[in-house]
Image 1: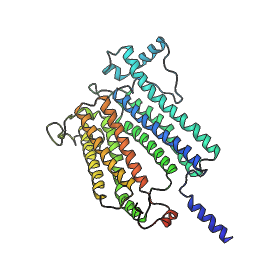
Image 2: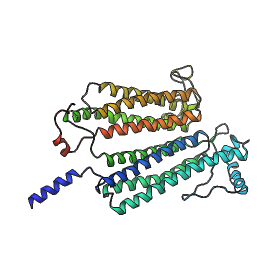
Image 3: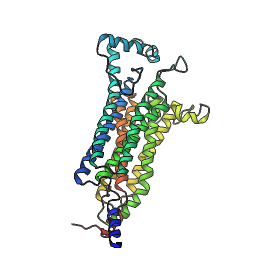
Image 4: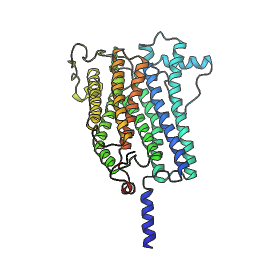
Amino acid sequence: MSTLAATAIKENKETVKMLVTAGPHAQKAVGIWLFASAGWVFSMVILGGVTRLTRSGLSMTDWKFTGSLPPLSDEDWAIEFEKYKQSPEFKRVNRGMNIDDFKFIYWMEYAHRMWGRALGIMFALPFSYFMRKGYINLRLGVRLAGLFALGGGQGMIGWWMVKSGLEEPPSEYSQPRVSPYRLAAHLTSAFAIYCGLFWTALSVVMPEPPTESLAWVKGAAKVKRFALPVGILVGITAVSGAFVAGNDAGHAFNTFPKMGDSWIPEDVLSMKPLIRNFFENTSTVQLDHRILATATLASITGLWWSTRKLDLHPAIRSLIGSTVGMAALQVTLGISTLLSYVPVSLGTAHQAGALTLLTFMLLLNHTLRRPSQMLLKSLPAVAKTI
């Protein structure tokens, strides 16, 4: 009996990190589905950025959870256009818009909404199938159910955001726009869903980190101490970008490295209470984003510099180098976007770059995980050289 118990405990330890235990075929199928879902969310973030940058987000003035058919006749289009004419955006910004211009922004917003609903179906059907086949264990099932619920709530967060832009601005000189707080909530939620899906997909297809020696494990542990806080900084910088977008701060101070004629604008602390400046003051929001972006690039470069002489798995070393390159590209995109007065192409690329950089940090932190005890016991002290 004691032998059987010991064997059972040993087998349990062997599978403790396996989220899919129905064999290699099931592991591959679930992994492909999760990576595809994460890719779909990535495309949703890009499409959302294009929708915002083309100022299409306020074109649909109502929302249904299940969605609806688009206008199919001239009469239907006239009705939708009439609804839009009642919005503050039309009255203050787009008064000269014709029906053809309206159709463009309407289709942009409609595509963004329906792409999100299609993701829900694309996620739910395979999820149900894999559950019935027994491919997904309880731990993975609960995690995925939580991500699915968050995805369902994302549509409501999106409408909550849009609704703020359909309200009258506080003064006659203000342009209608969505609340920066709600926009940040919407984008942060999308990033959270993406991170959850991507991390889970990695855990399914790569239950153990790549390592071939105890020396490489020790080196990875040293890198991990710095990689986690740097990853958090990347996430915070991305969220600060949402406040830049929500306040249209990219259209102010289109100079670099100075902000206009000064390093720090005079009105950075002009709002009361003081905390409002960090979320609503155009000058402060842009200054924050510049500081965070610079700190992010410096931190990632410092991570690379501090790990040059460590004994690391080649995959980890390559990943750190790629992350430095992506960080430099992202900062370049940000500066180019600012100096060019936020064109749609560069603005979209900068938003995609933020999520790409976050992807690199997720992959790096996932690769730096500590191996299971069973794998550690089987590793040599030093990796074999050929």
